Length: 507
Image 1 (cartoon, rainbow, N blue to C red):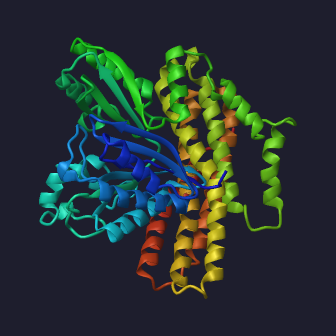
Image 2 (image 1 turned 90 degrees about the vertical axis):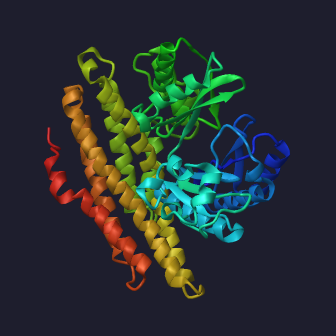
Image 3 (image 1 turned 135 degrees about the vertical axis):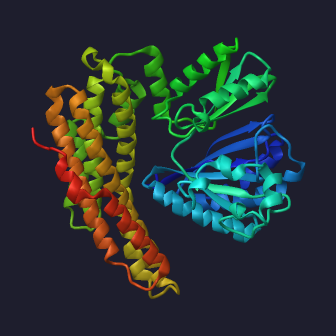
């Protein structure tokens, strides 16, 4: 398996003609890209394609898919329940392995620029790639849909696209491209055709109107039933079981009940594990209790015969080898991942215990965030090594490339972004671990001390890498100088010299 994996989930405004959808998928079939899932919905008149692949290949696949969709889909003839603004409506990139969210932001910007250039389709950036706070939410960009944007794009400055001319493609409209974390598209069907009830429940559950954090929702009539259609933008902090229970409770107010639910696209295994733990009320549940998870750990060497040493020893030996990678940046990320793991273990061992029931919400929130940080820091171990290799490659090829200096600057930006992300996560880890002390079992204080020490090592090691990379930038490029300024501002926001010392690491 490749060391870098990115998920891409393009949504196309076609859910009724399988021939057109097949043609779009065929256009995206290039080496290094794999089709995981396809979902078509005639009522929404929309399809969701789930791809995974290597960083460079999946960018080109998304661009080609947008081009084919522009050939085949005419929005002036399109009608469906789901709001839409483009033949290719939205293209999100999601980090899976060996890449960071910042990497996906760079990918989104590249893809957006290419779609605008090749197909004359205006492109807006959203979520983590957004250029303004207002454009972080897709709903704000898509307000008024294709027709509303078509009427205002040339005259309303708020409608100016990030890439391309301020006019929609006559038939393909406009496209939104972005970067985000894993999202769960989750729909609940009610035992009524009254779509008004679904809309009221959606208003109650979505965050924008006072509902659950990290939930977006709308009500539709689908297959003769009222449907509460939702996107869970951070399922670890707002888990799927909590959403289901909320909708069920709201439905009772109107004398209706959920009859079924559906997942559109794919769902992370962790989300299902959380739901199983909640509804089954298993004591001291841990994902390692699942047979397939334990088997996978054994088969990949994480729990190989020979004890824990067998799992960590290869990485330590790679660090000791006389090669530049993996180096301090990877070690810092690994230290941060271990800190997150230890802190999560302490919180999990206290959650559910009678003495700490009053802290159930805080512990659950900490575990969810620590799990996410742990996965992101694990991905940064490889990402840091790869970013260093890209810098070396850029320097070696600089004389042969007409844009050698630009390639070096781009590589240095990536090599800086990875450890900077590690530093920010390590600092957050310190805050979480320190906050766990008064609400967890004091007998596990030594584990928290170790977690704090590892987090501090991760922070200081990552910042050392950030500074050495920032010092390597050559002056003169406005884009590079802007990046350096922004990066230094992010470093200053952490204030390690002032704040780290305030977090007690002694027993």
